[in-house]
Image (tube, rainbow, N blue to C red):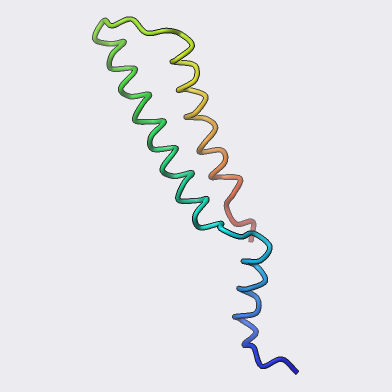
Length: 78
């Protein structure tokens, strides 16, 4: 009855179940990179003798744990 290719139909169904998955993955990668870069900069400042607030460091470490976790959870389960 349907003239749609079965592969295309499967791909469209998958996209309708999780829209913007590609965009989300790109954002998780960008946020993860930013968090790790920020942590490296903070650690280098600490190594250089500069004083930082503990809250800032904890937020940065939390971001370094959160964004890769979200990237992992957003991956395909196939």
